Length: 302
Image (cartoon, rainbow, N blue to C red):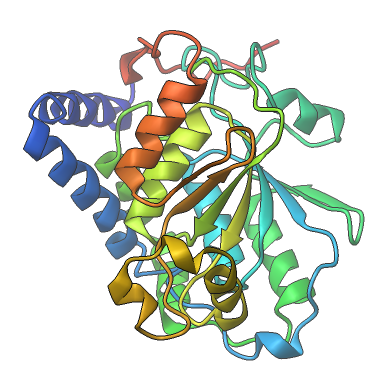
């Protein structure tokens, strides 16, 4: 077993202990989620400049990914910076024992059927007919197609530099549990996709995405990073009544993230802890995974 897996296992066990202490549990959860953003240089906090001069997709892009994958995170940061919404199809691992397994997965087989390799992320753009794997190639495509005249913010440039260093993998050590977006939890299939308003860099949105990921719940991601004025105004027009009084009287582009809308139940929730609790109580349909990083293997499924 590699040293990385041993470290992941040790960290996950420590994290598991902290979750047994009520007050400490929430603090550690939020703090480590926040530190992921810090270690990515704040990439995904701000949108690029001059996006109004760039082409916008008529049809929403579709992204197959899972929260615990660092390469998927890199692409989600680009979606946030380019102010692109996406139909998210979560593809967590079904087991740590076999690499590339599709068994019981809700969306992994779709990637194969669409002609992609069973590696993530996988992008489908029905506006151009493009289907592709590889995070670097996807980011290049997104900038050339939907950000050709845009200028990336410094935070995104810093994140790009950090991608080329060991810091790229440290966020996964901070969020080491398999339920931090890595390993599938049995769930009921919603009739309609859920909707999530947020941005990649928000630690509170990250907590919700992790739950959506392991529960394999399809959702529409509405990115509302700082500087996304048009969509922030759209959020205010639709959901201003849900905001606190302080936010209502502040700037017209102030929003609260995350915000989850579930059209299947009519539920609308704002607080990350409430959203995560709701998602598990509403959709979980089986036991939590018992595998640990000690079970991790790289053997490919035949």
